Length: 205
Image 1: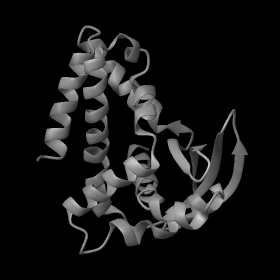
Image 2 (image 1 turned 135 degrees about the horizontal axis):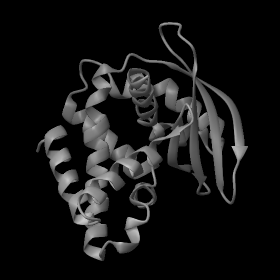
Image 3 (image 1 turned 120 degrees about the horizontal axis):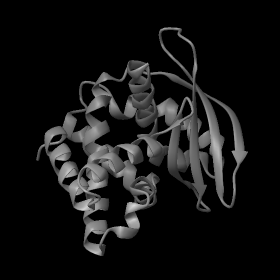
């Protein structure tokens, strides 16, 4: 199960890597937006000419352009956002972006490519919507469901979360971060220390 979830997470993040191109082509069609992500993923982040540095730079760029990283980071920090100081919040958001790059960019070298099939687009509250897709694995295995939570910002979209087989990536990281903070006596500074170490280990300067 853990191997399958890791594989699907890699698939999801790799698909997101082409969001900048998808916005230009898909306009205001959320189904086309997500469909283009899957279609262009391999060409963008895989291949012998894509070095780890290039891969990380491209992923960082896509985060800034297509994900609402501050909103995601705030959601992941959860109730501890209120107790953090302004200085801690600022450093946390910087480290959170570094953490995402460090945690996912290097995995793209393992990406083998899958097909995305859009099944449904569902309106949520306000300007939110969910695009439901099915991942067809290259080995012919059982398809897996991947739900994209998007915010409609008028001319394009911002990705807020991904649910892989019903499991939210944001909620998963929130549980992990909360555990670190709790083991540090409820101090956000403990999480910041852990993030610094994690980023240095996974994505050395």
